[in-house]
Amino acid sequence: MPDLGSYAIEVLSAYAVSIALLAGIVWLSWRRYAKVRAALEQAEKNG
Amino acid sequence: MSMWEYANPKRFMGWTRPVLPWTFALAGACLVVGLIWGFFFTPDDFRQGSTVKIIYLHVPAALMAINAWIMMLVASLIWVVRRHHVSALAARAAAPIGVVFTLIALFTGGIWGQPMWGTYWAWDPRLTSFLILFLFYLGYIALWEAIEDPDTAADLTAVLCMVGSVFAILSRYAVLFWNQGLHQGASLSLDKEENVADVFWLPLLVCIAGFVLLFIALVLMRTRTEIRARRIRALEARARRA
Image 1: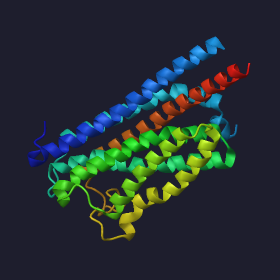
Image 2: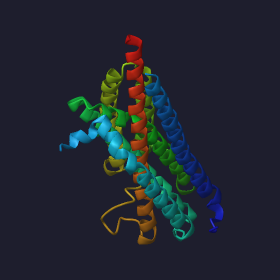
Image 3: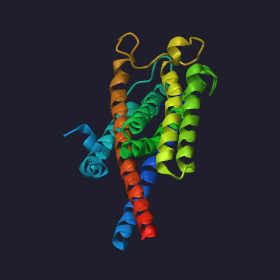
Image 4: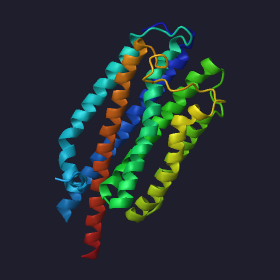
């Protein structure tokens, strides 16, 4: 871990929030992708 | 074959399927390498101390927040002129990604600004135009959700996108023609004097590549989702008519 000096909170919170937001959009996009793909397969099977 | 044929929904689904995992893998690799390099293996800046490490998130996110809107503008114009459904769906797919990039840029900018400028926020031209761009993103998504007919929604959001482009351009160039702001000029420049030092520049380039690739991967994946959702609506409509 590098020595971040007196700015540790600023730097670490910038990284934590940004990585959480990026992971969030990837996860939400993937979840909807899988859900809609399954729904389409079901709709094509039914119809 | 004309380039427009790639925008055919069936063809789009075909060529994006093998491309998608590679784009995600490359994006992940660039982000991991760039962020680890920047965070662990670059020195502190002589003036900004360790806060310079925020550059690896702030600059790529701000760059892509603007570029995502420009991509939406191009896709919207293609929809308006050529009525390609995939382009309208791609614009819709890009908006939530743009929101996330704008939020990251605003948050990291604020948290970087406090120790450097003494404030989290100032009504500086670049900061203000960025905040307005963020509100345009939210309005764009809300408009898509509010209108039931997808073609009408695509038409109206295309108009909103054109209006919002003024703020996307302002957020990039405001510092050049308004000098009273706190925000400095561009961090990236072809001019060696103005560009950030090489020790920060190389990991920054890798992070930018990661953000660009992540944006492309997410747009492709979300556009595929929108195409499938549209197909479900068509099947449901057909079933209702039968």
